[in-house]
Length: 256
Image 1 (cartoon, one colour):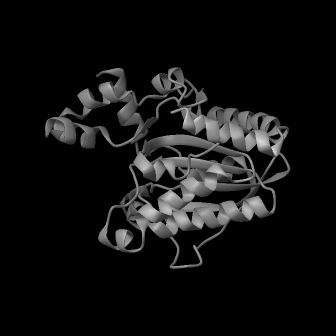
Image 2 (tube, one colour):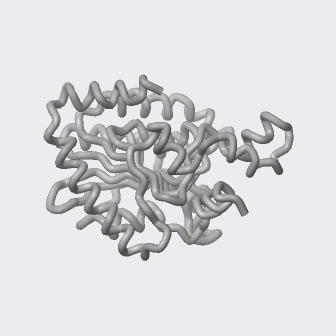
Protein backbone atom coordinates (compact mmCIF):
# COMPACT_ATOMS: atom_id res chain seq x y z
CA UNK A 1 0.00 0.00 0.00
CA UNK A 2 1.38 3.42 -1.00
CA UNK A 3 1.76 6.30 1.47
CA UNK A 4 -1.09 8.20 -0.18
CA UNK A 5 -3.40 5.17 0.03
CA UNK A 6 -2.61 4.81 3.71
CA UNK A 7 -3.26 8.49 4.39
CA UNK A 8 -6.53 8.31 2.45
CA UNK A 9 -7.65 5.32 4.51
CA UNK A 10 -6.59 6.95 7.79
CA UNK A 11 -8.29 10.25 6.93
CA UNK A 12 -11.61 8.45 6.37
CA UNK A 13 -11.32 6.09 9.31
CA UNK A 14 -14.53 6.15 11.34
CA UNK A 15 -12.59 5.75 14.58
CA UNK A 16 -10.92 9.16 14.22
CA UNK A 17 -11.68 11.75 16.87
CA UNK A 18 -14.57 14.00 15.84
CA UNK A 19 -14.98 17.76 16.15
CA UNK A 20 -17.05 17.27 19.30
CA UNK A 21 -14.28 15.12 20.78
CA UNK A 22 -11.77 17.92 20.19
CA UNK A 23 -14.16 20.57 21.50
CA UNK A 24 -14.77 18.66 24.73
CA UNK A 25 -11.14 17.57 25.29
CA UNK A 26 -9.16 20.70 24.38
CA UNK A 27 -11.45 23.44 25.68
CA UNK A 28 -13.11 24.14 29.02
CA UNK A 29 -16.83 24.75 29.54
CA UNK A 30 -17.86 24.03 25.95
CA UNK A 31 -21.50 25.03 25.39
CA UNK A 32 -23.02 23.95 22.07
CA UNK A 33 -25.35 26.37 20.27
CA UNK A 34 -27.88 25.38 17.61
CA UNK A 35 -29.74 26.75 14.61
CA UNK A 36 -29.10 29.27 11.86
CA UNK A 37 -32.09 31.52 12.76
CA UNK A 38 -33.42 31.11 9.20
CA UNK A 39 -34.36 27.49 8.52
CA UNK A 40 -33.21 25.09 11.21
CA UNK A 41 -30.31 23.22 12.74
CA UNK A 42 -27.80 20.99 10.96
CA UNK A 43 -26.20 18.12 12.86
CA UNK A 44 -23.30 18.03 10.41
CA UNK A 45 -21.91 21.26 11.89
CA UNK A 46 -21.42 21.79 15.60
CA UNK A 47 -20.45 25.03 17.25
CA UNK A 48 -20.51 26.94 20.46
CA UNK A 49 -18.69 28.83 23.17
CA UNK A 50 -15.73 27.62 25.19
CA UNK A 51 -12.64 28.73 27.07
CA UNK A 52 -9.04 28.05 26.10
CA UNK A 53 -6.55 28.69 28.89
CA UNK A 54 -9.14 31.00 30.45
CA UNK A 55 -9.82 32.95 27.25
CA UNK A 56 -13.31 32.86 25.68
CA UNK A 57 -13.29 31.42 22.14
CA UNK A 58 -15.81 30.24 19.56
CA UNK A 59 -15.41 26.64 18.39
CA UNK A 60 -16.98 25.37 15.16
CA UNK A 61 -16.55 21.97 13.52
CA UNK A 62 -17.89 19.63 10.88
CA UNK A 63 -19.11 16.54 12.67
CA UNK A 64 -19.09 12.99 11.31
CA UNK A 65 -20.82 10.17 13.17
CA UNK A 66 -19.20 7.34 15.10
CA UNK A 67 -21.66 4.68 13.87
CA UNK A 68 -24.34 4.28 11.20
CA UNK A 69 -27.18 5.88 13.16
CA UNK A 70 -24.99 8.77 14.26
CA UNK A 71 -23.83 9.26 10.67
CA UNK A 72 -27.43 9.33 9.47
CA UNK A 73 -28.19 12.03 12.03
CA UNK A 74 -25.06 13.94 11.01
CA UNK A 75 -25.62 13.38 7.26
CA UNK A 76 -22.21 11.66 7.14
CA UNK A 77 -20.50 14.98 7.83
CA UNK A 78 -21.89 16.66 4.71
CA UNK A 79 -23.34 20.03 5.76
CA UNK A 80 -26.50 21.62 4.42
CA UNK A 81 -26.77 25.40 3.89
CA UNK A 82 -28.27 25.87 7.34
CA UNK A 83 -25.09 24.36 8.79
CA UNK A 84 -22.89 26.93 7.06
CA UNK A 85 -25.29 29.71 8.05
CA UNK A 86 -25.17 28.50 11.67
CA UNK A 87 -21.36 28.61 11.50
CA UNK A 88 -21.48 32.13 10.06
CA UNK A 89 -23.90 33.26 12.79
CA UNK A 90 -21.47 32.02 15.43
CA UNK A 91 -18.51 33.67 13.70
CA UNK A 92 -20.28 37.04 13.52
CA UNK A 93 -21.20 36.65 17.19
CA UNK A 94 -17.51 35.94 17.93
CA UNK A 95 -16.53 39.10 16.06
CA UNK A 96 -19.04 41.15 18.08
CA UNK A 97 -17.61 39.93 21.38
CA UNK A 98 -13.98 39.79 20.20
CA UNK A 99 -13.60 36.01 20.59
CA UNK A 100 -11.06 34.12 18.42
CA UNK A 101 -12.55 31.43 16.17
CA UNK A 102 -11.20 27.87 15.94
CA UNK A 103 -12.64 25.49 13.33
CA UNK A 104 -12.25 21.72 12.95
CA UNK A 105 -12.79 20.27 9.49
CA UNK A 106 -13.65 16.71 8.47
CA UNK A 107 -15.93 16.41 5.45
CA UNK A 108 -16.01 14.82 2.04
CA UNK A 109 -17.79 17.97 0.89
CA UNK A 110 -20.99 19.96 1.21
CA UNK A 111 -24.21 18.00 0.73
CA UNK A 112 -25.26 18.17 -2.97
CA UNK A 113 -28.93 17.23 -2.48
CA UNK A 114 -31.88 18.91 -4.17
CA UNK A 115 -33.15 20.46 -0.94
CA UNK A 116 -29.71 21.85 -0.13
CA UNK A 117 -29.48 23.45 -3.57
CA UNK A 118 -33.00 24.89 -3.27
CA UNK A 119 -32.04 26.51 0.04
CA UNK A 120 -28.91 28.07 -1.48
CA UNK A 121 -25.96 25.80 -0.83
CA UNK A 122 -23.64 27.70 -3.16
CA UNK A 123 -24.63 31.06 -1.73
CA UNK A 124 -24.13 29.87 1.85
CA UNK A 125 -20.60 28.65 1.10
CA UNK A 126 -19.72 31.79 -0.86
CA UNK A 127 -21.06 34.00 1.94
CA UNK A 128 -18.80 32.22 4.45
CA UNK A 129 -15.76 32.75 2.22
CA UNK A 130 -16.58 36.45 1.91
CA UNK A 131 -17.29 37.03 5.58
CA UNK A 132 -14.38 34.97 6.91
CA UNK A 133 -11.91 36.85 4.72
CA UNK A 134 -12.75 40.04 6.63
CA UNK A 135 -13.71 38.70 10.07
CA UNK A 136 -12.10 40.99 12.62
CA UNK A 137 -10.85 38.29 15.02
CA UNK A 138 -8.11 35.65 14.65
CA UNK A 139 -9.17 32.40 12.95
CA UNK A 140 -7.36 29.05 13.11
CA UNK A 141 -8.60 26.11 11.02
CA UNK A 142 -7.53 22.52 11.69
CA UNK A 143 -8.19 19.66 9.27
CA UNK A 144 -8.80 16.54 11.37
CA UNK A 145 -9.84 14.07 8.65
CA UNK A 146 -11.02 14.81 5.14
CA UNK A 147 -10.86 18.35 3.82
CA UNK A 148 -13.04 18.07 0.74
CA UNK A 149 -13.86 20.82 -1.73
CA UNK A 150 -15.74 24.05 -0.97
CA UNK A 151 -17.49 22.29 1.87
CA UNK A 152 -14.19 22.34 3.77
CA UNK A 153 -13.01 25.73 2.51
CA UNK A 154 -16.18 27.35 3.88
CA UNK A 155 -14.64 26.93 7.35
CA UNK A 156 -10.98 27.25 6.34
CA UNK A 157 -10.51 30.88 5.29
CA UNK A 158 -8.28 31.38 8.30
CA UNK A 159 -5.12 33.14 9.44
CA UNK A 160 -3.52 29.73 10.04
CA UNK A 161 -4.50 26.39 8.53
CA UNK A 162 -3.16 23.24 10.21
CA UNK A 163 -3.49 19.58 9.32
CA UNK A 164 -3.09 16.43 11.31
CA UNK A 165 -0.46 14.12 9.84
CA UNK A 166 -2.88 11.51 8.44
CA UNK A 167 -5.41 13.83 6.82
CA UNK A 168 -6.14 15.14 3.33
CA UNK A 169 -7.14 18.47 1.80
CA UNK A 170 -8.25 18.72 -1.81
CA UNK A 171 -10.51 20.51 -4.28
CA UNK A 172 -12.48 17.27 -4.74
CA UNK A 173 -12.26 13.61 -3.82
CA UNK A 174 -9.73 11.37 -5.60
CA UNK A 175 -12.69 9.28 -6.84
CA UNK A 176 -14.25 12.38 -8.39
CA UNK A 177 -10.93 13.44 -9.89
CA UNK A 178 -10.44 10.00 -11.45
CA UNK A 179 -14.00 9.94 -12.77
CA UNK A 180 -13.55 13.31 -14.47
CA UNK A 181 -10.04 12.71 -15.81
CA UNK A 182 -10.22 9.05 -16.82
CA UNK A 183 -13.94 8.20 -16.52
CA UNK A 184 -12.85 5.55 -14.03
CA UNK A 185 -13.41 6.10 -10.32
CA UNK A 186 -11.46 2.95 -9.45
CA UNK A 187 -8.22 4.83 -10.23
CA UNK A 188 -8.66 6.97 -7.11
CA UNK A 189 -5.27 6.04 -5.64
CA UNK A 190 -3.51 7.06 -8.84
CA UNK A 191 -5.48 10.31 -8.83
CA UNK A 192 -4.55 10.98 -5.20
CA UNK A 193 -0.85 10.71 -6.10
CA UNK A 194 -1.29 13.40 -8.77
CA UNK A 195 -3.43 15.69 -6.64
CA UNK A 196 -0.87 16.30 -3.84
CA UNK A 197 -3.45 16.02 -1.07
CA UNK A 198 -1.37 14.87 1.91
CA UNK A 199 -0.29 17.08 4.79
CA UNK A 200 3.43 16.86 4.00
CA UNK A 201 2.97 17.84 0.35
CA UNK A 202 0.65 20.72 1.18
CA UNK A 203 3.07 22.01 3.82
CA UNK A 204 5.88 22.07 1.23
CA UNK A 205 3.65 24.06 -1.15
CA UNK A 206 2.69 26.55 1.56
CA UNK A 207 -1.01 25.69 1.43
CA UNK A 208 -1.01 24.81 5.13
CA UNK A 209 1.10 26.29 7.91
CA UNK A 210 1.62 23.38 10.28
CA UNK A 211 1.37 19.58 10.39
CA UNK A 212 0.56 17.99 13.74
CA UNK A 213 2.25 14.56 14.09
CA UNK A 214 0.02 11.55 14.74
CA UNK A 215 2.18 8.49 14.09
CA UNK A 216 3.39 6.96 17.35
CA UNK A 217 1.39 9.28 19.59
CA UNK A 218 -1.58 8.57 21.83
CA UNK A 219 -4.75 10.61 21.28
CA UNK A 220 -4.18 12.37 24.60
CA UNK A 221 -0.72 13.50 23.44
CA UNK A 222 -2.10 14.78 20.14
CA UNK A 223 -4.83 16.71 21.96
CA UNK A 224 -2.28 18.27 24.31
CA UNK A 225 -0.04 19.24 21.37
CA UNK A 226 -2.97 20.94 19.62
CA UNK A 227 -3.98 22.77 22.79
CA UNK A 228 -0.45 24.05 23.42
CA UNK A 229 -0.05 25.16 19.80
CA UNK A 230 -3.44 26.93 19.82
CA UNK A 231 -2.58 28.91 22.95
CA UNK A 232 0.79 30.00 21.51
CA UNK A 233 -0.58 30.83 18.06
CA UNK A 234 -3.55 32.82 19.34
CA UNK A 235 -1.23 34.93 21.50
CA UNK A 236 0.85 35.73 18.42
CA UNK A 237 -2.17 36.53 16.23
CA UNK A 238 -3.83 38.70 18.87
CA UNK A 239 -0.62 40.73 19.21
CA UNK A 240 -0.92 41.85 15.57
CA UNK A 241 -2.66 45.13 14.69
CA UNK A 242 -6.10 44.41 13.21
CA UNK A 243 -5.23 45.87 9.82
CA UNK A 244 -2.14 43.68 9.53
CA UNK A 245 -4.06 40.58 10.63
CA UNK A 246 -6.70 41.08 7.94
CA UNK A 247 -4.17 42.00 5.25
CA UNK A 248 -2.09 38.89 5.96
CA UNK A 249 -5.20 36.72 5.74
CA UNK A 250 -6.27 38.34 2.47
CA UNK A 251 -2.82 38.04 0.90
CA UNK A 252 -2.49 34.44 2.10
CA UNK A 253 -5.35 33.37 -0.12
CA UNK A 254 -4.66 35.79 -2.98
CA UNK A 255 -1.21 34.25 -3.36
CA UNK A 256 -2.75 30.93 -4.41
